[in-house]
Length: 426
Image 1 (cartoon, rainbow, N blue to C red):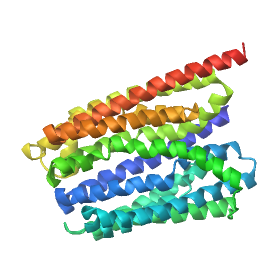
Image 2: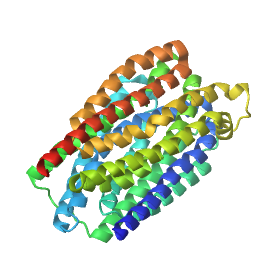
Image 3: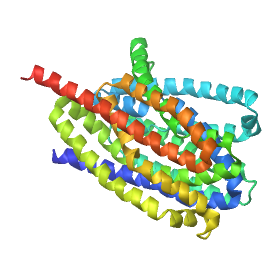
Image 4: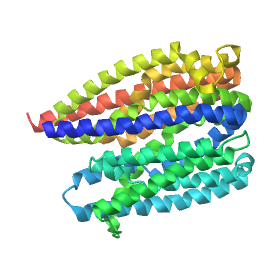
């Protein structure tokens, strides 16, 4: 047990460093790009990255959860692990091909994307880097240190390129190159480590295994691909009802909100394999661990929300390079409104992962789909009448709604599992 806890602590520290880099990187590059590119061009940069994010989710396909579980269950079977790795890469490269085709089709039918096709195609290397990087494998064997080392090198490369290449407000192409290059190099390095440490060679997966693996992962993928629609699509809706300057203001606040919310993924990625095992071995210990993590989230995010609300002017001033006052008053107000959503943001993803563990994949899809549909209506109304502030209110409401739905569904599933366990072990 002591060895197991030691491994969890080491993994938590490693992932904390990775997440720290993920937060520190935008905190450094974000104000730099904002100052050099200007608010409007920074808005364009953000829109392109948002567009690419959807296809990155497509190629990732939920393997961060399912592949990790499969590898954890087969740690003593190297041939099975070889088959799992091969299956993951086979599906990922197929989906990457689909993504490229979608890029080209979107550019044909959507004028705004056609104008920025070069930026989108360069961003494809960002997706390819994430495709190659086997973080799901390192999580499965619980060696997060490899992720930390590669992530550090990746961020250093991107940061250096941003500073060296982006010098004026027309250097959007160089900004995209810098971000994509670091991730692509990380993918190559991670793949090299996989081949060297595991001596992996491609093994054609059995047809039935590939079908079952794909089917199970598709449920997770559906939930993951729909989830960002209640938040990231809002920037496109806001652009319809406002102007590039307003999109830039909203992007400033949303980036800060997202950076603070990213802290959730440290605990999620650390405890997911552990909670998954506990659910099948001891439902009582599983419930106890879940309650402890919930309390940890409550304490941490109450503090973060208060920090974001009362320190909004200071944060925006530091990151935008502008003095406190009327010029930054609007993004400050947007960020303060988002503080309410920050309180509930960790519970959206945390309870989603618990639904996957408890086999409630269809229920998770139902919850997210409902919120996405409601969001399309409320986001349009709020942005039409109240512009950026309205969109911030909408974001907070949607975060709260999805967190509540996932929690209620989790409680229902847990009660059912407890009853079934009691029936088998009276």
